[in-house]
Amino acid sequence: MRVYIESYGCAMNMADGQLMAELLAEAGHTIVRAPEEADVIVLNTCTVRSDTERRMLRRLRELLSLGKRVVVAGCLASAQPGLVRKVSPDVSLVSARAVEAIVEAVEAEGTVYILEPRPRRRLPKLAQGLVFTIPIAEGCAGSCAYCIVRVARGPLRSYRPEAIVEAVRQAVGQGAREIRLTAQDTGVYGLDIGTRLPELLKAVCAVEGRFMVRVGMMNPDAALRILDDLLEAYEDPKIYKFLHLPVQTGDDRLLMAMGRRYTVQDFLTVVEAFRSRFEDLFLATDIMVGLPGEDEEAFKRTLALLERAEPDKVHVARYTPRPHTRAAAMPNQVPEPEKKRRSRLVSALALRIGLKRNKAFIGRRLQCLVLNEGRRVGQLEARSMNYKPVYFKGPICLLGKFLEIDIIDAGPYFLLGQLVD
Image (cartoon, helix red, strand yellow):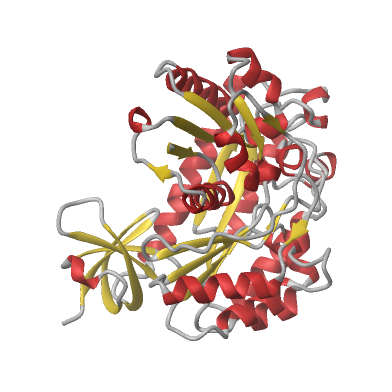
């Protein structure tokens, strides 16, 4: 059969989409590039926020209008299968925790619901282009009051280090130059199987070949538990000096109410330890405005934290109540107009800080890995060794190369460069 796969959401979901494509191809099916060409459409969904959920349901209706068989996979199928059935009882469902059942669902003659977790037996292994994303764990060791991901993905399940290393080895052999290690929280990798993230990073970096490793998001409490060994692992030149450490709010009372297992000072301790070791560290963080109970003083503490920590990039989100979460039933919900106001203020501050930090790179010469075509004709996108996006003019034959680039200008979230002769 001809199958079209459309994936949304996080890096984990994208990796799941790649795995589904591999499994279907191995079963003899043809992966097509457009839904109109398909016999069966697979919609691999995200449901992290209410606006995302609405977008998924809208896209589902659009795909159903084509008159094809549709399989809904991913987090919406796991966490809210009833919503999908309201749109159409004829849609098949495959839980995000049963990805490898996709062949069964596609080949079924009628509607099937595969919602019970099934053990994952393999990881993606076919690199497409220069970037390869590999899940190192699924699920979460936390219990945040606002998050529906644990409902969708379940408890922590780390994948065996030897399987991850072998997947990296194969990808590098196929031409991958950037390896992205992803999980709901990379910092808790291995807690359930008797190993830890630093050991995995050392094993991955020992793979032969020239490539870079981007370590995915980790929570401050997880990073703090392994901090010394994590810093040592990050010394490897194959690891981007990039840290995605979500803090969510600068108010300790809110952190406790939301089930976040760290304090503002814990966050700062990790940041300061990394910055003292790696001067050019690229720090990314997440801020969620409008959490239940966030008053003006709590919000001001968040702004003050950003001023102090000076993250290079801030992912700003407005809190939205999610079903099956404790926060949805909490009192003192923040009105939507106020969430929007706070979001605008945080975003504006983040842009100012990002621009300030990026301007400090003007006049420097950076080693960069060229990974993509840029936004404009004749432009390429590279990543510096601390994962800053660097745009410069150059021929497409430079893709996959490590180059020296002089930085001549900067924006809040990118650098502009000129290729060294």
